[in-house]
Image (cartoon, rainbow, N blue to C red; front, side, top):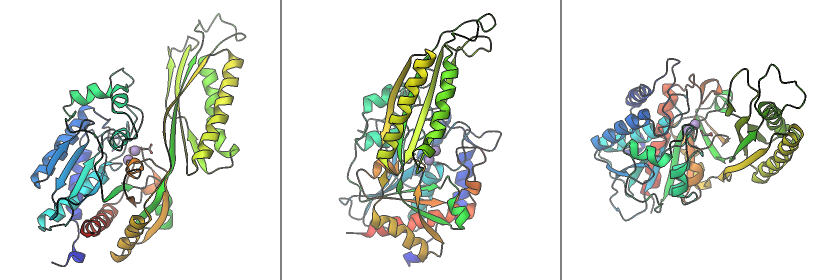
Length: 413
Ligand code: GLV
Ligand code: MN
Ligand code: MN
């Protein structure tokens, strides 16, 4: 057959995504499939079932990463790999992550039903806990797999209820025995929604990011002095929440102060004891800093740290600042990025060279092998929310670009 005419089955991809969207589906039209939750397990079980239906070899490693392998005609060659994640944010969307796993599955199904023999093996993957919203940090299992993060440290990470990532992996039956350790990869492609407004604004179907911004996470713990709110005068209070409020505004103001080219956000906060008539004596909040310029991100943190300390001293609220996680900006492989753009062109899809503001497992993969990503538009630029949406037509287009990018890599010497 003429391989250049091969296309994925868009209707089947849509059905597959709709099936997955039922798992953890929320009343607002999104999904909640937190890492290692029962919903994550159900989605994994279905993914494994679908892999077996097309005769893929299923491999589950110590971090619960699920690989589905289709042999090449020369199995001694390094494989072509693609995947993303099936976990979601709390009240997240129906496309973030899952599109990259189901898109890769659709590619595999297309190859399988057309009985195509690729020279190199083709592997698709679901990386455990990409989101990092239940257990910080994000992209933890591709990080361990790539050798950038320690496995035991990852196992010991706790959720808000004190459950560890390692125990939860075991509970849902996905702590495999295969070492979570990289093997050589010829090319890694990750297919994902853009999660931003650019493609829609530029009226383009496919985005090829030149890379991903750096991502730095911090955890801040403040101590205050609790007391009855009525009888306690305003003077002399040590209110941990007021200290946090001042700090949070500093985080919001820092990008402008640093001259732009970065973003910083406080997205999570816990206040203790969280009663309307007790002065708060404990606060935990998170800081997320991103930039293409790693040094700028570090300098921004140094500036925030200084300001946080001044606020804590002035308010008499002792502070502890943890540097939880850093991943450097990831400039992708030029040849593969070009391939994504050229393949889009060949298939007749408009395309754009851009940058990824969102973090992806591709960041860690980029540290060990040639890597690129394929983006499709997010309607209204919304993501990590229940209304996250992408047209079925665009989902199909991205999967076709993935199919042909992977096939080209799979035939290379
Ligand atoms: C990953 O979802 C991120 O926070 O960018
Ligand atoms: Mn994602
Ligand atoms: Mn996400």
